[in-house]
Image (tube, rainbow, N blue to C red; front, side, top):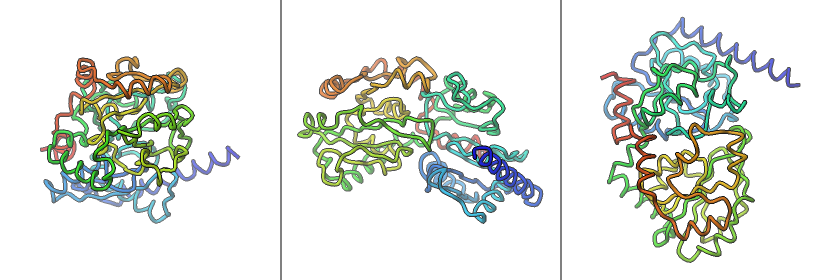
Length: 381
């Protein structure tokens, strides 16, 4: 059965290559088209949103096209796939922000660019070919990621990590910053998003906000999960429901939520459907996370973060990190519920370590990342 499945996948891949090659010969390259591709979001958001809006406002002569779908499991019709391959073959600039399997077997045209504007910033959990050390990375013969002409990172210091992860030359990795972090430098955006969120969730306004945002366990989108037995939701509510609200923001890959009656609860709120976690950070007082890259975004706010990692040994053994875990922990560590409760009550910021963390991992993010990415990689002004 596995053999048949693999054979059919090869047939589909070869079909895509043949169709794509046909269009590269028949279609002229559109020098002013920017194509946005994603298999993990069904609308323009994240880095895409800032690049898209900047081009729309400042370069109206550029044609902006999208082919987006919510997840890898979402199917495309045959017609949609044909149009997608035609647009890839004829677009000068092709942007992806995550794993995008359809494009890896394709040979990008000589004068075109395939730009990876990776959805996560920093260098935390190992990804791509970096995972070969834990025997879970891509085989060296794999084509995945290797045809990027360019990618962007949040700091000069982590260029080498992304070059390794994607199997590309370090010259293709540019420390231009992360476009979606530009909002952290906008006082107007801060005022507006806080106003919008408090209008949408008025029950948050006179409470301290705890944001629980762990990453997923499992090998990827199809197997993602979180072990809710790790955290005692009843005890946390008993201790903190008077003065706090507790926002649950699970990773988009995780479909199963904790066993909480969110619709009738006045302490726990499920905000997992809020696509952009960055907006929630503007009203967050304490972040509880683990191995999630949200620690990089949250470092802009200089507020307390708790690393809740009761399964650290298992996670480190199966996934691994680019640097010793201690390099990331600018907040306190809790390994059980008792320690977590204590740290929520006594949350604090290690300012020195936080600044060292920020300088190393986020040094290129200065509020002008979007402009730099567009001008350096697309309009070449």
